Image (cartoon, rainbow, N blue to C red; front, side, top):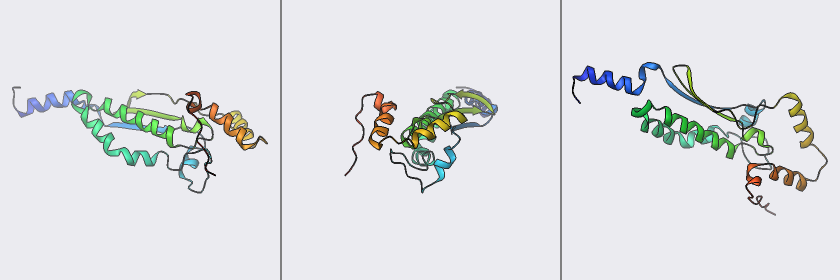
Amino acid sequence: MGGDFRERLAILREQTHCREGRLVGSVTVDQVYAHYQHERLDLRHPRGGHAYYLTEPLLAHAFDYVQSVAGSYLDDGGERGMRHSMEHLSDEVELQAPWEFVDLCRSGHPEVSRGGVLVYDRPPKVHRLNAAELRQKNRWRFATLPDRLKGWIYWHNTARGRLGLPPPRRLP
């Protein structure tokens, strides 16, 4: 590699896209009640999941995410690493968000932008529920069905149930 420092620095700037702006990744959980579920520690989640379903995996994997971006930085300015990191965070939301219905846990929407221009955008697996869908969901929650039947219906309408995995066993 020839040239002086300025020439090499210009090559590095071109290679890493650093003149194109800041690289930003985000995961949005797009349901009307997502923030409420995320912040409230006093809510019970009998089917699984917990509050801070986005914050906890972000903090637990922050070093891995930075390492992933750094690992792809010289190839494409970190875009591949950021995309991978935001997809992983969205997958973690799917595992940790409350599971009563699949609409919240499968609403993770990963995006990556550079300099305000969107470079990656995967739509959420479940759309944002409209008012009619929210009302129907509320009717199902408070239906007079036995809890075991609600659990069976729930389990067989989730990805875990469709994969043929057995439902979690209740402790006595």
